[in-house]
Image 1 (cartoon, rainbow, N blue to C red):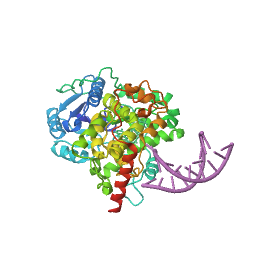
Image 2 (image 1 turned 45 degrees about the vertical axis):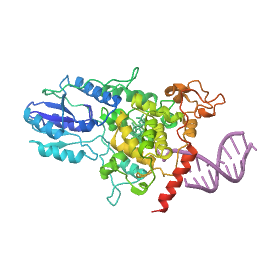
Image 3 (image 1 turned 90 degrees about the vertical axis):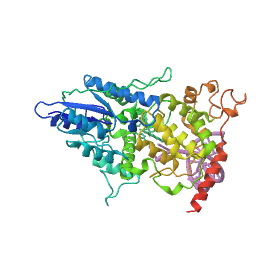
Image 4 (image 1 turned 135 degrees about the vertical axis):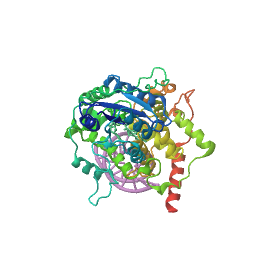
Length: 448
DNA sequence: TTGATTTTTAG
DNA sequence: TAAAAATCA
Ligand SMILES: Cc1cc2nc3c(=O)[nH]c(=O)nc-3n(C[C@H](O)[C@H](O)[C@H](O)COP(=O)(O)OP(=O)(O)OC[C@H]3O[C@@H](n4cnc5c(N)ncnc54)[C@H](O)[C@@H]3O)c2cc1C
């Protein structure tokens, strides 16, 4: 009898424990049916790069399965039972999916299925919820989590199982949405992920610690999109790291930390982890929409912010340093509640992930666990000068400023030749807004 | 992990 | 004058 492997965020064959189990469980030379459920709730309001990356990843997987990947539109709790009956499957296998809806949705699926739903593995080296403090409570601070996580360890990667793929009727994988002209999305799929990792491991890892904060250098691994859809598993990355690669390992551990936090506090996906700052004054009405729109379209008049936001719209990716700068600017300079920014990010990032994104935002907004204190306010001019010292990153994304010398590119209004035409004036005065944010913070703190 | 600004001090 | 240290949110 055949089994079903339900592909979720594990769109790969190698080191996929659930798939291995599905293959092993198929009795009497049975085979495995691989299905991906295109749940509208999973996609949400997604930008074109994000959708294109998913569809391309699915196409790559379909190729690996010799065209046998079964794609079905709908809710897992409806699609999977139907499919299981259709092919008289013996069991359904999948990786555990953590997050606000993961478990609840899976209970629903398990209940609706005529056969067992078997979980194994997850998208993390250490499953969320697995490491805890000595007293059994979850970690709230990163560094002790890291030590415990590291001590816990993980298995070495396994090879892809040999699988005979079972066919069934499939909905077509949707065509790519219209993309901006000349856009180069990253190559996706398991083979591309492996290749990208090898290139980074050989060429980028050594300089990572020193260059990871420089958006102009493109010195990071860009593995986030692959980790998002599971075309590579973090175990594979971790297995290649030596003692000298501590900095990179710690970044991977942040992803695992946030997943762990979300596991214990599923509500923190959309709601404040800590409600302490709920009383801050935030823009609303017409002011909110005007500011949000200027920010989203990269028209704030702060070059480093605009460069980042334009890259996000165009490519669906932004350097970590830029994510922090633009998030800080939205929350502390434009006084827009972090939830608006998080929604925009999630729709457009090709690596958009509930745990990392929402806790990244809560880190910036000062509402998360182990977050940056609210009073730590980024100065967008200084950040630009420090981390994009020659202005090359800004020039790449803000052509209006192409001609400016490095000296003034992060503050074009101070150009002795006058502010450049076609580029907006600063939407707000950073120093005034900084003072306003601090004053409001004091007010909220006093009132508590 | 991921600041900014002001003040002090070395050269 | 720039780097280091102290202080500030
Ligand atoms: C406001 C904000 C929102 C973010 N949203 C997301 C998101 O939706 N999805 C996402 O994957 N990352 C998110 N991050 C984290 C980080 O910015 C990206 O993971 C990173 O920029 C991806 O590029 P990279 O793969 O080249 O990173 P590298 O520097 O090469 O890091 C390697 C891997 O480590 C992990 N990692 C690195 N930094 C972080 C971090 N701060 N938090 C969690 N994991 C990290 C990622 O999986 C990344 O792929 C967010 C950060 C902030 C500040």
